[in-house]
Image (tube, rainbow, N blue to C red):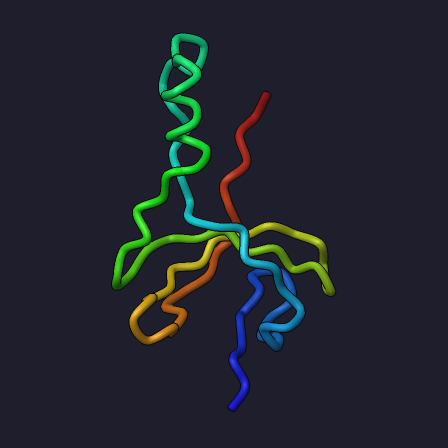
Amino acid sequence: MSFLISCPYCGPRDVGEFSFGGERLSRPPNPESLSALEWWHYVYDRKNVDGRHTEWWYHRQGCGQWFHAERDTMTNRLERTWAPVRRQA
């Protein structure tokens, strides 16, 4: 049984084409005020919840784009994928 990921840029592809990028996190609101320990927690601590959560995925053998996926960690079912919103500098 093959596990397919629907790349928002290329369409459905085998999971072997992708790299898992980890849980999607929100950046701290005031990063310049964080202590070294607070940065450590931001970088390394993960919730690792059972059920649905949002993750980063990278299409390494395809378009080379990062995207978000909502996946249920209990069933490994992908609920949806989408391109991240890019911020203007």
